[in-house]
Image 1: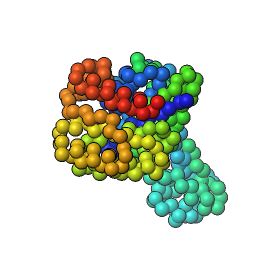
Image 2: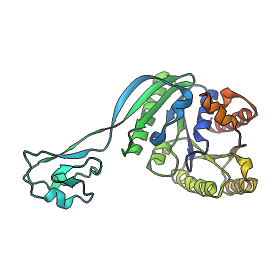
Image 3: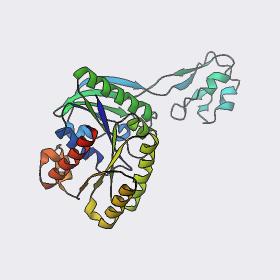
Image 4: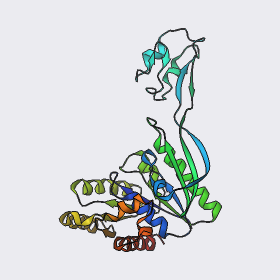
Length: 285
């Protein structure tokens, strides 16, 4: 059966993508999905060769036909986003609610899809990668995440692969829910700080709501050992396994500069990361 692992974090910069790239070097028969579409960066390490590229159509925006428009003012009156000025629609302000189309008495308003990003299917040295880019200022990142996951599942089925490793979005918002729903395991990467513990508690609330099994990895555990102990006690109280504790190491940055995963780079910390993967892999299997 196909399994899906989603790697999450409460904020950016906790080491989520570094772990995913390491897992990519270690796992067998897998597809990788970069669902952090607002700030995708897994491709910087894996150097993908794009084999398929498609436009992503997001929410629709309104446009007004000047020849049909009678300048009655109904669209301006009911647009709560103030997106219509002199009977022209500002596409950056339009939220696609379609109220203007509904209230227009002469059908002068139409809703049109716009190109908001791109999706890619690529080959990498670690296997297939599905990733995407959302253009600046665009919304519907949750919709794009869902599309990336669907394409990753299609690739896995086509190639007979039984594992999808997902680099999820940070936080607890819509893109995170889209990254997480339907996964078999959530690996939450946290740091031993006050905000790290707070963010961990919020993400656990989301995984528990969706009844998804969670594990925790404490990154940079040695920068605040007291807070690390506090996080471990929290996990113990809530029956959440700790997959491992990774010390702060400059090797992650050195590996990233060389476009390598920490496993490819080597060193003592790479062995610790391998131990984290063993815990995750044993749990998912």
